[in-house]
Image 1 (cartoon, rainbow, N blue to C red):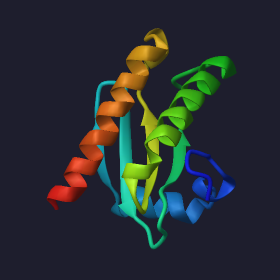
Image 2: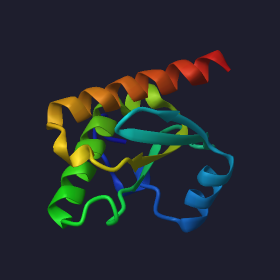
Image 3: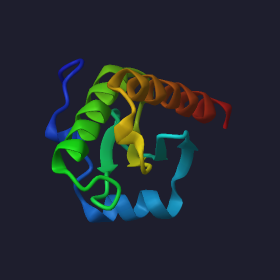
Image 4: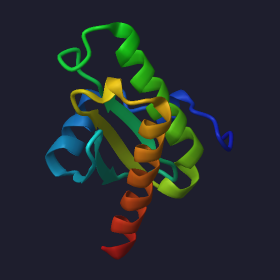
Length: 119
């Protein structure tokens, strides 16, 4: 698999996978995002996103958040290991600049890895 790519295999697309993570997943939260995660039987992480229209009425805002999450995930996928991740956005984050949101995601990836290594 490409070292820093984001292929279709790395996306959560099956509704059953989302249900499993929402039901049995653990979470790491910040003021901008909540990341739910659950270990998978694969050697690589998979990403799903829940960016609701209720929080961002304009598609351009939802797409911006999705691009930022994908890019941050793509850069950190090597340390995330075999986990399924769902990133949930919180209302009002579209007012923050990209750099703040990327920094917030970076802290969450680090916290997630630390939380997983502690347990």
